[in-house]
Image (cartoon, rainbow, N blue to C red):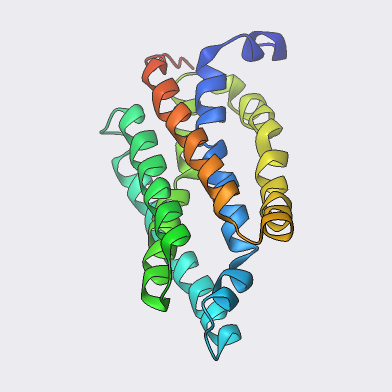
Length: 193
């Protein structure tokens, strides 16, 4: 397939856009985790921040294993809904967190949801494009990486201007809602070798 063919296909755009809120949510929270912990007034904020980072990494690994294990058996739309749903729960928990425990639960859900970024892309692309085009399509899917990379900056800006991360996290919840609706139209698998 040519690049033009790929860019004209919903088989490309739906999965690529479908992981954007996952990537943005991960970046916004991960790179501002120290600020979130500090706002709780925790005495050992550095220690808790490093522990939460470890929890997130473990949960992301578990998420990757889950999406990989069930990816060949479940409709990929359900996997996108699960990943974005877990991430939405994480955003709400992080926004409402007023204790260490609440923040920990938010980070657990965030890791489980955002652990689906790479498996979901690989699953949906490999099953909807010819094998010979897999590398090209995966490479082109990197088009949305700047959005995920820009979200920590947006989160920091939100905090500097408004004194809270809530506005950005609420915006991410709206993006998740749009993605959940959009994924309904994910075309069926159609890969050929």
